[in-house]
Length: 619
Ligand SMILES: Cc1ncc(C[n+]2csc(CCOP(=O)(O)OP(=O)(O)O)c2C)c(N)n1
Ligand SMILES: [Mg+2]
Image (tube, rainbow, N blue to C red):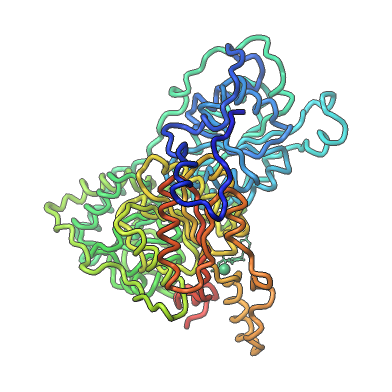
């Protein structure tokens, strides 16, 4: 292994020293320079796993995030000694959940699948929640698994038997788009081509390929004939059929008060501009969603309310006034319409643009409530929007007016309590005009605090509501943003951060700059809100809501957790006064190539809309 240039950070290290230590962090290109193997023999594929490694390269997988395991020691060797740990490059993770979450975060930025390799059944078990998160978020991940040897004669006593399972794919079949257990190396190559193709075709989702350890380690009699991956993975675009497209255009053209729900769309700036153009031509109001990445400028005059995890009153009001509702794959169209029209059908006509129906299954309810849809455009929104612009044919375009005022945030009050709102204000102030990407936000966030003006300004949430995904997803997103010129920022709840904290190490080890800000209310506060609700419903003691919820006595030393993994740890910040210098130092450290974590001790609290939605109370 190449000697690491980096020494460990300590409390006394100045930022200048830090920058020199981290000088290699900004080295361009891939990360292969960090764990560079000694050169060995090169040549044709000799073992089954050599063919598999070549297939991963052929479909363009840039990284394999993994926690190692003997079930795929064959593939591990092929990645290192046959391909030289380049294209793909291994990213070592301290937990399989992080490996999948990192691939998930990478996909949130790029729309492309990287691989996560999970050891036999046990590694797969660890990875399941992150696979579910990526599934619900409709993000592609190539999950590589292993089992066996399937041939009992090749199994070592005990350990190979407990780590061999029949139909291992059954563990994740209900929340992957496709899975396979190819019997030969040649079949495995085809399987990887198919997996990459399926995963990256809308609706995107994780796929799982389980590789027999015996097949990986088997010596080949001859290399399989070449197979050009490009010819087996054609882009499969989903465009709307002409007739429903024309009907949708007719409805939109004659609408007096149209509304667009801008849902699951890509990070493509051109597609962003086209959505803005469609809204401006129609003079349609637009709502966006904090569950998914930024989909429309939130300070545009046509944007309604603030983006939220649950639609707020302004959005529901606008839906009630709309005569035509155009959903661009809105995550929960059925639930949103039910909230706007309780016990009744929507008044306006509904046009749904989505391919999501093609992966709904009988196990998971993540397909959400069945929405009313008068016209269904079975299409990818990015493909449908320019066709809708053309078909609607409304000439001219209103100027791209923005609301005059920036998003509202609380004025600083140095002596006052520190709420998440002040955290947002302080961070924006410290950042100034730097281009940033928010990779993750805590449950206590209010979408009004931070405007989004580019598809990479915000990447959305974890998808499946699986807490602990935030840190890993953020590391993967920061990895993808390394060359973007954007400062990557993850704001995590303390509960979320503590569950996924060791994902940090992968970022420090591979020199992936990233700023974590922890909205630390020392509680799994979401569930305090639930216990309060139950106590009120049952007329019991509300004051006991903290029991089994508060993460205090002792307070977890988040700063030390960060430093222990080679990150810069700052805080705990306990007053508004201390916040700005801590953020400024952290930003400088990240700009010098570091991972920085700022522990901000905030008062517990959610927005009224969030509290009401969490507990389904009307108040
Ligand atoms: C894996 C997992 N475990 C438990 C939960 C239930 N849960 C939902 S939110 C939450 C609290 C999260 O705490 P934190 O990140 O600190 O955010 P806070 O609610 O305090 O703002 C919990 C435990 C979950 N969604 N996922
Ligand atoms: Mg908390």
